[in-house]
Image 1 (cartoon, one colour):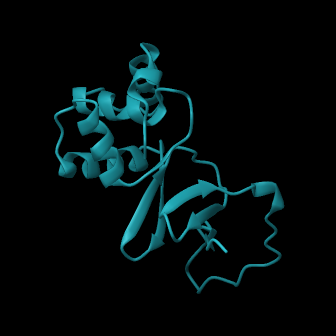
Image 2 (cartoon, one colour):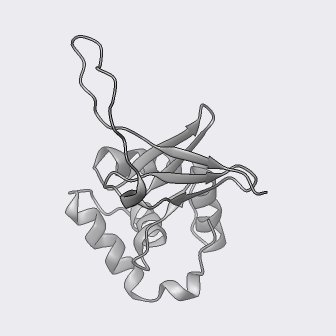
Image 3 (cartoon, helix red, strand yellow):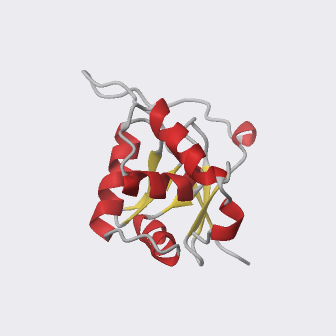
Length: 145
């Protein structure tokens, strides 16, 4: 995740604070800083904990990787983000929370939104007895030719 810190501008912190407030999260210094990086320019982001940590470090924020993980988890639990698991070892956190598919570029490890209006799922299998489908994640893996 490459963030142009200069392009965030003075409203980034205000946007981040409003984002936290909509979920009722306490605006700690570290949450505000990470929220400003995630939504401060008004664009949706797909980040890993490591890429957000690097962006925070680049911006001069003193935050540990463990705090970034915990904060991302809190943002997900509050409904501000969703976690997209690409494989058993890699998770991305997405600020766009409505259901939508993703493209995953295998060579670069980049996760991007795919056009939801082009996806058709005709039928899902019945869940086991006593279970209900919570959500369906669609990750389309891409290789460059």
